[in-house]
Amino acid sequence: MNTITFESITVESGHYGRLVVARLKPGEDIVEALEKLCLSHAIMRAVVRSAVGSLVEARLTHGGARTAHTFTVAGPGIEILNAYGEVSLDAGMRTSISGMVADTDGRMYAGCFVSGANRSLITVEVTLQEWIVETRYQEPVAA
Amino acid sequence: MLPTKFPLDTPAAPALSAQRNRSGTPAFTLPVQHPGRAEMPRVLGVTTGKRTHEFRIVLPGSTCVGAALRRLLDGWRAGAGCGRIVAGACAQVQYHVMMHAAHGARPYVYSPPIVCNGNNTLIGAAITLGCRQDGTRILHCHGGFVDAQGRHHGGHVILDETFTAAAGLQIRLCLFDGIDLVASPDAETTFDLLQPV
Image 1 (tube, rainbow over the protein chains, first blue to last red):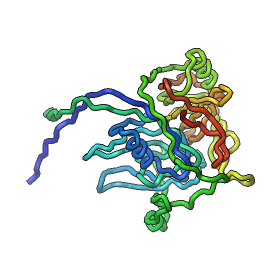
Image 2 (image 1 turned 90 degrees about the vertical axis):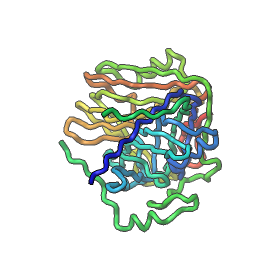
Image 3 (image 1 turned 30 degrees about the horizontal axis):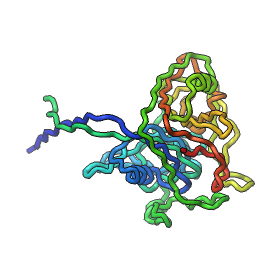
Image 4 (image 1 turned 180 degrees about the vertical axis):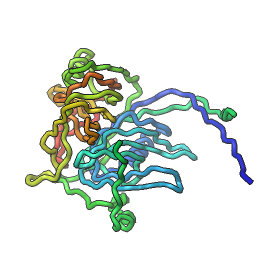
């Protein structure tokens, strides 16, 4: 027998807070560094506003838990073309940064950056903005 | 439409992924040795509580992207910021990719410029706005385009040599108040790099 699960929609309202502008030196992993940066400024939630830089190589993933496909874009010399996502240090939430990169032939790849496997080659310039939650509530999914 | 292709992991990748370098980062590729000494801290961050100034810019066709942005930013007396090129196309894109250095102290350098003429559809691009110590503005842009033949072009985009196509370009900029990004010589990599101050 099939079981139908009704999940709810989570809604947050809030506002943007402090801006964090950073530079990652060679060898720093982009996901880990953004989490450390937020921790050091006591920022629990942040949105990636922009990221420009280069990686030794890129390790990206896409797909669900059962269908995940993780691949390496061989470097060194991978350019970050853009990055999006959220940093979250709140319990029960996780950081997710996705983006586009280009290899040394200019070919583009996209996916979620795997934590610990996307190290800065020369520099990564990144801008984060704090997300301050004022209210959070659940809405039922419309039938 | 071109099929999406993903790079195959090498057979050694899982074994390599289990390795850890000194900082605890999984090691897929051997560490790159830069000419200078690595100094702490490894992440430089500056924060401000001041509000950002947000702009949406639409450039018309046949516009030099770099010149247009410089003119606008000079008029606003803007300092540092960031942004994204969110939509549009370019009649000419000039960009560099990174390449292994054949000689010199730097292990990696930028390639000679690659010029793409024709209709280049924007896929996405990010910009960091900063300046040199003499006040000269820096537009550090990385972006990706697909040309009229469907070929990918992604890398370090030279906005002063990039021109919009008839469709124009839409750009969103976020200008900072209270934080500057200033290019200064980096002893470790020997590049002039933007540092938040």
